[in-house]
Image (cartoon, rainbow, N blue to C red; front, side, top):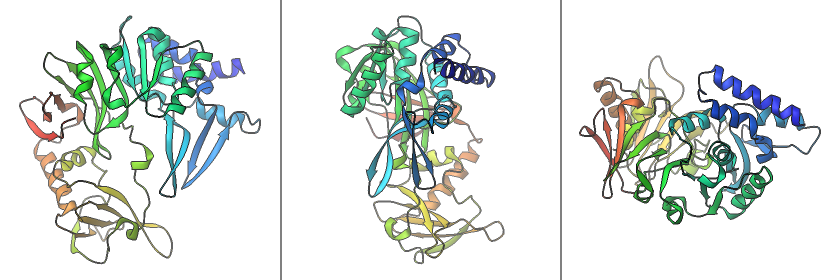
Length: 383
């Protein structure tokens, strides 16, 4: 078993190096030294709406389990039930994304790191291997998951400080820190995190004020603010319970046969252009929910929809008539109109990628900018 997992871990580290993701030998050594399977002894894989448990203790599933654990994929390790659906409760991130984030932190020996979102403890294990467990602190909201991660890490010889706490508050009693890494999506960056960073320290956060609307942003602590740019490649830590679920129109609370009729040449999915979707969110009402409208006879998806808590909704058919798709909108705001306007604005700005956008966080305000902090695009609610 030892030879089996070490060979697999070596192949994973070599693959990430060959793919141009992994550059620092320190993380290559950590990937090959930390047994990911010990932190994920059981995983869940989804096919359609059904979940399959793959148990490493089952000899008939051992090969499938090991192949999943040492692949460059995220792993769902615990489920919960929400509104009659099974949703992700705990997971471990895709290794390539983990390494990309760890390298972006530009860590030095002796740096003290606070991780928001313990999960299985795998990221804390990599950090402990590279920096020493005494320099690693991690918080998560679920006591049983934190206890489980602590016990499993201890069996590997790693004893970072793991605590059950509201991650939005950070962990001030052990600060200040040189780095903060959040492995969960946040609508904004709490100023409490900035207060726990040394000046010159770095926070890496997945900022998502709306599902899929945002990206990883690398912020440096200045004397009076956090400031930095979004990373070029999009990534997300949004939990499945907030994802694009195939709900029917009745559950979404609108009648697709009603409303104002129009057409669009845009793709049916509002997530087709994630930068434009991010720009659109500044003008959308609160409580946006997305999903797929299903054909009542076949059960197959026929349209994408958005709904908002103010009663606004839009329904965009997947099938096109030539270059155009049918759009229906209802309620006080034209949700699809906001997305079309955002796409036009993005084109007028020169089709910027994520790397041209930045973020500034102060005690009283948080805003997004393009190219320069003075060129404000929109303001996020203060966290």
